[in-house]
Amino acid sequence: MTGNSPINPPVNQPNDPPTTSNSRVRQVEAIVNGTVIDHIPGHMTLKVANMLASEHDQVSIGMNLRSSRLGRKGVVKISGRELDQRTLSRLALVAPSASVSIIRDTHVVQKFTVAMPPFFEDIARCANPNCVTNHEKWATRLEVIRTDHLEVRCVYCERSFPASELVLI
Ligand SMILES: [Zn+2]
Image (tube, rainbow, N blue to C red; front, side, top):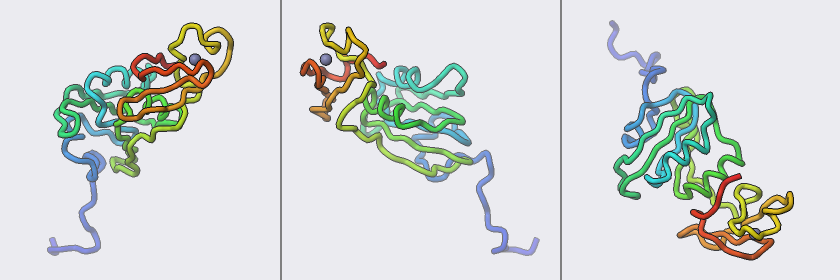
């Protein structure tokens, strides 16, 4: 040993948890590459996991974890996959407050809160059974009219609905 060696500073070993994530994220096993969706309202956790993960994905789910912001929250981690724009829009509809971290080689390379789009384009069905979009093959277009308790209005039939009444496409 030659004492301090500035040439070889300590580096993160491959199995270390992401160094920039906070301790609460680590209530669920860390992943090496993939996506962490955090701050999911507790009751939406399984819905988010179901929506995002295909049967081949390796998924870790943490439910009813303590959160200063939400009381109880969920965390979903998907190994080996980063979410595309359409998936992020679906996430905005189901868990608008969620944060997304992209993990590469155990490091958080990007972290952001899911952005609320002005419109949901062909993401969910209109909840009005008589709406033309439920009878003809039209892409749905739902305008966000309220964000604190997410509410949307169909641009075709002009009916508005809370997000909880919508069914994803
Ligand atoms: Zn409609």
